[in-house]
Length: 254
Ligand code: G
Ligand code: G
Ligand code: MN
Ligand code: NA
Image (tube, rainbow, N blue to C red; front, top):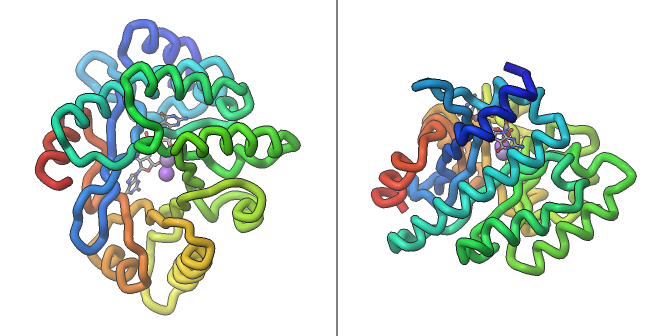
């Protein structure tokens, strides 16, 4: 399915959907936010983004997909706000192609402005590769302009990239999402545990919020909580679900 044309067709035929995975407080399990993840509908099957990641590397596909996702997400957030749900924030994944195209600001303003959704409800999730070239300065400026409007930036898959820590010095970051590879096999006394504790300590000192990704077991949730991690995301709490199920979850748990 790593076919650009297939994603293109799905976009044209309105078969791209926004699914959402809750971000919860590890102590109360209260839902404080969501991450939007794109899905492709094929007949009555839902295809995960994992299957078309290659196609998403194409600049045009990436841009069209981000644009569509922002529209879908903005409309859903509008619905939740209208329902009176105490909705906090939704993360939208943004590729480096989006960041470098210089249209991100316009896309966000169009999508969320059209629905009257303030940018304080929006987080852009960027991976470290976004900042890994000589246009870093330009990207930082674009992001800074968005942050002035209330938008927040999450560094996604934190710890997996090259020179992770230096990004905390050079680019604006509000949230780090600790990659799931550190959460797997989390146990007292392990290297994983030491790294997670270290990251939590650094983040606290820098006043950056942390979300632990890929939390699958109660043991992991307990270890994270006792290490001082406030927020988590993962199959233990919920898989990514469609907007209807998301609404139900928000009404019940927000
Ligand atoms: O949820 P899933 O397993 O399908 O995600 C696979 C990969 O695709 C993850 O790395 C995720 O960040 C990425 N991804 C999911 N949705 C989006 C999206 O809307 N835009 C971008 N750029 N990447 C996404
Ligand atoms: O790259 P990014 O972190 O945006 O992508 C999140 C990916 O992780 C998606 O593919 C999503 O479906 C997946 N995911 C979410 N929760 C869990 C989990 O608890 N375990 C695993 N293995 N994957 C998860
Ligand atoms: Mn993400
Ligand atoms: Na993530």
